[in-house]
Picture 1 (cartoon, rainbow, N blue to C red):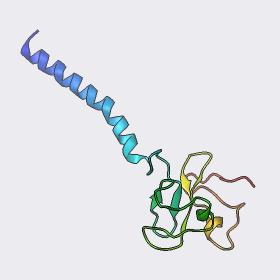
Picture 2: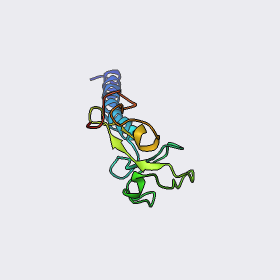
Picture 3: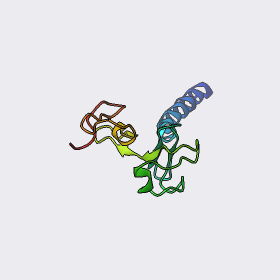
Length: 116
């Protein structure tokens, strides 16, 4: 086999290896915060997300709004998970007076998210 053919073969194999390795890196970079990859708490004031235990807030305290360590506002709530797309968010009825639980929809996919 000539040197030119060996070089082409090596470049093709290198490109294939790079393509196979790129996908896992891409998924990890897009993952939410936390050791398990899931945010347990989200601040509706500043948008910062925290893993369970990271913010030093009990999940039960965050049901009614806890103090956010990032912005200092009492707008840290437990994250809910959309059953259709898996997006984590805080439903409007949790932090907005007058918002209805029955009208809640996932902000990412628009699916109704909670049981009625």
